[in-house]
Image 1 (cartoon, rainbow, N blue to C red):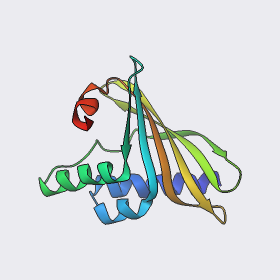
Image 2: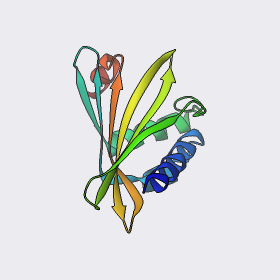
Image 3: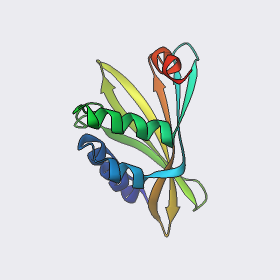
Image 4: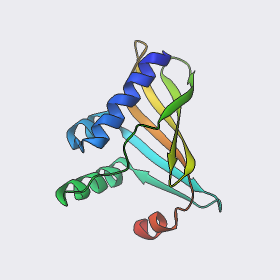
Length: 132
């Protein structure tokens, strides 16, 4: 299971780097939510529609999201009962480590779609303003 999750994450990261919106749309579960919390304890939750709208807008502007994924590590995975599994991802952003937890829907031991992305951010105030 661990290697299957790592492979799924690389497929996801590569789709994001390439701004392959169709692949991202397939990878995000219809019930996908991105939950972000910052150092102040503020939280924001983005739906799949909000997330995909952001990707599409950036692509239309000729921009990319994020940074190269050459510093990514996957320190832990866990099975959540056969129907889902979690994988932790660590990377460095602006000189500081950023931690993510991805919850994948599983079928026959393989990740199929991303149900949740949980992110610990430095500051989500800009995202809060955008979603209000």
